[in-house]
Amino acid sequence: MSEILAKLSYCVEVGKINKASPYPPNMKDQEGADELAKRALEEGCKPGEILENALIPAMSVVGNKFSRQEIYVPQMLMSAKAMSSAMVHLKPFFLSGETKRKGTFIIGTVTGDLHDIGKNLVAMMIEGGGWEVIDLGVDAGPDKFLKAVDEHPGAVIGLSALLTTTMENMRKIVASVKEKYPDLRILVGGAPVTQDFCNKIGADFYSPDPQGAVNYLNAVAS
Ligand code: B1M
Image (cartoon, rainbow, N blue to C red; front, side):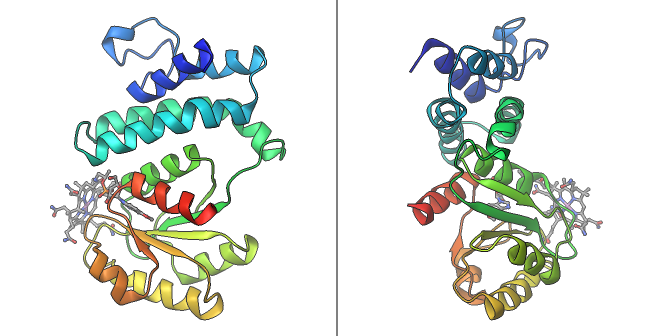
């Protein structure tokens, strides 16, 4: 990997967003993911190369560290923000179709639930994993998901819930979507959700964390 991509990857791994960002303290006044991604493009790196060789591996390291409880939510958020600041420079190329994405992932927090921190983390990790992400926001019900699937045939759906009361609403969304699109894959997650619950409501996969979701999507895409 070129020196600039190695530096960019490291910035995402440790959550260094840009030169002005004081975090992490030992990298004060150094370039961050924002400046490095911009410079990498200016120096001729291809957007796909930046995504595949710097951003995706860095987010994978972050996700695995989080799964092993070596880092916690604040560090993962900083990494996600650093990745987003780099993605800003790459997005125009993806939107123009110059770089192929792995597929489309539709995500939302389910009906009645306003918690979105975990959902946003999952969305950012998956976007960093090379997928186009359609984020339906919070309080998203069956109609919203069905409309999004109609507009993006072949997409994979992700449902997030943080309340024991609202996780029941996953069941309704899964039933409505599967009735119209029996082969569509649905991934579920969120603090109260379990593998057992996933099986009971007929969803396809449960992941307790973002990296598990990324790994599942990569398996689906290959
Ligand atoms: Co709420 N809240 N809250 N809350 N809140 C909890 C969830 C609660 C456990 C607190 C408690 O009582 N100890 C409790 C739920 C109890 C229960 O149902 N068993 C609770 C309650 C009761 C409520 C209200 C009802 C309180 C009230 O009004 N009386 C109310 C409900 C509002 C509503 O949604 N209708 C409410 C409101 C709120 C705030 C608005 C104040 C705020 C949300 C702000 C926001 O999200 N923008 C809030 C917060 C912050 C929390 C806690 C403190 C933190 C949640 C969080 O962001 N965690 C929470 C207590 C706690 O969890 N310690 C609590 C960090 C986040 C990174 O983790 O979302 O679990 P998490 O996501 C993880 C994984 O779950 C996974 O990946 C993420 C990273 O590892 N994951 C997925 C998530 N989605 C996934 C999807 C996937 C795969 C993995 O695939 C698709």
